[in-house]
Every structure is written in structure tokens, then in C-alpha cells.
Image 1 (cartoon, helix red, strand yellow):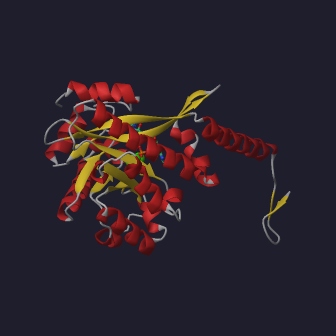
Image 2 (tube, rainbow, N blue to C red):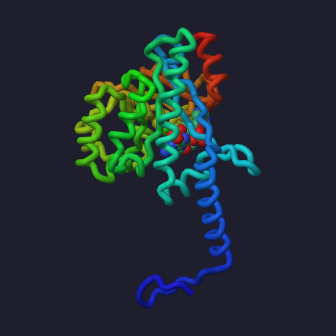
Length: 281
Ligand code: C2E
Ligand code: CA
Ligand code: CA
Ligand code: CA
């Protein structure tokens, strides 16, 4: 039995033991994966509704495990968050994504506006060297910071909202773009929004999923979009899977969209090929 403080005991069951072992194993695997560079970055296009064309990509990490194959973020990000390893992974994804976009710009004729979105975990956002890490990522490869977009969740910002405001301001002053990711699923305290100098609200896919199911769902999304616009921000809807969803979102005045309807996340080569097709949705 394990003491959880005075008088409270919790039985450490064989089940929990197995689970703890699994976690430890995963943590060790992750450490090794970082050393051996088993991670990959996939790129999912983001489509501008005004032009119908790709306006950028979101960088999404993948783990190419030697025996398990491709592991999805949902299966290792929580452990990486808990152990702090996520800050190392995020930094690598950030550097790789900046490098990739710069390399596309140099090897192909791509629209200079094409941006790359990178997820910043709570851990990295509160890292003492956050600003240096970000600065170095775009400077190292000579990328215009306007092409870099950081996706930050409400919880990362709300954990320490005063420090967060300062950090966001500094990032905006260096022309980096900022999105609030999974908007509406976190603390959702609207009172802070006006203080944060962000460019975009990303409407979570859980709202987009059930879009067609009721007028209330449409009302909710419509409100997020007008909220964004009234605060001089853009709205991106993620998780668009059907043409019906796309039609509704367009009618509601949403600015950008992302989802399987357009494309799954792709490896770098396939992403550039898709971009070169210059398809109009
Ligand atoms: P997210 O930031 O909300 O990213 C969007 C997720 O939705 C991605 O899952 C993407 O593949 C998936 N998705 C895109 N379109 C659709 C669609 O039409 N339908 C459905 N059902 N899903 C769609 P993914 O790549 O598995 O990543 C899951 C989460 O893991 C991400 O959610 C993000 O929170 C986290 N993540 C991924 N890469 C990174 C990273 O490099 N750093 C950090 N800190 N987190 C990451
Ligand atoms: Ca994201
Ligand atoms: Ca998201
Ligand atoms: Ca999400």
C-alpha cells in the first residue's frame, strides 16, 4: 500500500503496477527516440476560403517506433508532457518545420505568404528560454518570422496569464503569428482574450464534427467566428471532413479550414507535391 498522506491509503494494485511499468517503458522509449531521432514531422494543409488555395500547413509530430511502427501523438504526447520531454520534442519540431518551409521556398516557386504552424506545449510555453528557442529557430534558417505561426492552447496561456501576455506581445513584435488552438475547449475565460495579441482563433474539431446536427451547434460556431472578427482576428476551423461542413463554414464567414476533406497530414514531399498542384477548393 502507498501512503497518500494521513489516514488515506490507496492500494497499489497489480493493474496500476503494470500501468506504471508501461509508463516507465514509454518514458525510456521516448528518451531513446529523442537520441536516435525517431520523430518525423507531417504537414497538414490549411486552406484559405477566400482564394480556395493552400495558405499554409500545420506541423504535426509522428513517432516512427522501431517495433511499433508509426505512433500517433495521442499515444505519447501525454507522457511527453508529464515528463517534460515534450519541450525537447517541440523544439525539434519547430526547428524542422522552419527548415522545411525555408527549403521549399528555396527549391520551388511557392507563394511567399505560405506559413507554417507549430504546436507549442504548455511545457515549452513556460520554458525560461522560450523566446531564444523560437528566435533561433527562424533566424538559423533565415526564415521570415511572418511565415511562422505558433499554436498555443488556452491552458498554456491561462496557467500564468500575466507572463503569457508579455511573452505573446514580444512574439508579436517580432512579427510571428499567434493562434489560440482548440479554442472553446479550455478554460474559455473570455475576459482575458482582449489582452492577448493573437491573430487567429482555431475552432476545435469537436465543434466542427457535430456542426450539421443542430442549429445550436451552428450558432456556437457562428459566434466564435464573429467574436474573432470583432476582435480583428481570423477564424480557422479544424477537422473539416465533409463538403457540407465546408459549405456551412464558408457561409458563416470562416476564414480558413483544415481537415481530412482537404487532406490528411502528409510527409514533406507529398505536402510539397500537393502545394505544387495549386488546387482550388
Ligand atoms: P491539434 O493541434 O488539434 O491537431 C489537429 C489534429 O487533428 C491532428 O491530429 C490532425 O491529424 C487531426 N485532424 C486533422 N484533420 C482532421 C479531420 O478532418 N478529422 C479528424 N478526426 N482529425 C483531424 P494528430 O496529428 O494526431 O495530433 C493530435 C494532437 O497532438 C494535436 O492536436 C496536438 O494537440 C498534439 N500534437 C501534434 N503534434 C504536436 C507537436 O509537435 N507538439 C505538441 N506539443 N503537440 C502536438
Ligand atoms: Ca494545433
Ligand atoms: Ca487544434
Ligand atoms: Ca484539437
